[in-house]
Amino acid sequence: MSDTPMRKVPVLATVVVIAAVFTMIGLGIWQLGRLEEKEAMIARFEAAADNPAMLAAFPEEDPEANLYRRTPYECFHPGRWSAIAGRNSSDQAGYVHIAECWDSERRISADVVVGWSRSPTAPVWEGGALTGMIAPGGEAGWRVVADPPLAGLQANATPDPNDTPNNHLAYAFQWFFFALTALVIYALALRRRWRDRSAA
Image 1 (cartoon, one colour):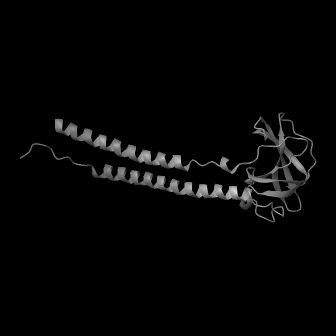
Image 2 (image 1 turned 45 degrees about the horizontal axis):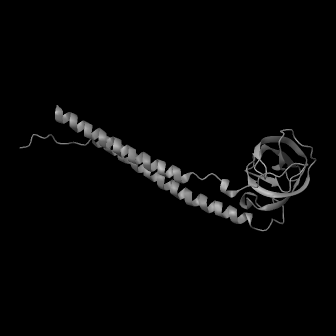
């Protein structure tokens, strides 16, 4: 008879590790699915940028469904101004000036990116008709980037669909790496357990 002790595998610990590994693999596969969805969305945005300009200002047409399309818009009663770091059409750093425009008749508000300057000081602008591109951002999830710019400001950098965050491939590989790491660590732990029992 052999004196080699039986290499027993702890059932509960093994079940927990296998469940965790399958969960991490599932999350990785889910991220790959999200990658396909995000790539399709970016492609849709790129196609929208080439579509003809909208004929009607929203909310007659859904702004979020028309991201990156050009649209007419009328800014009623520009109120709160904000300036955030941004770049102009020549890729120079400065400030993007945003006006919150309130429409009392339709009871909606929208952010309008009026233009770019080197100074954070708010420009003087009383509102009015404009054309621009619907871009993601703002409290409503979208805003209008005026093109041409207004209030004597310079043109902002054109919104680019490819700036949409798309890290799902990296996240997928991360989850797969976690799953592999968990298996390797558990295998090493079992090996050490068996070695210690053999030496006892």
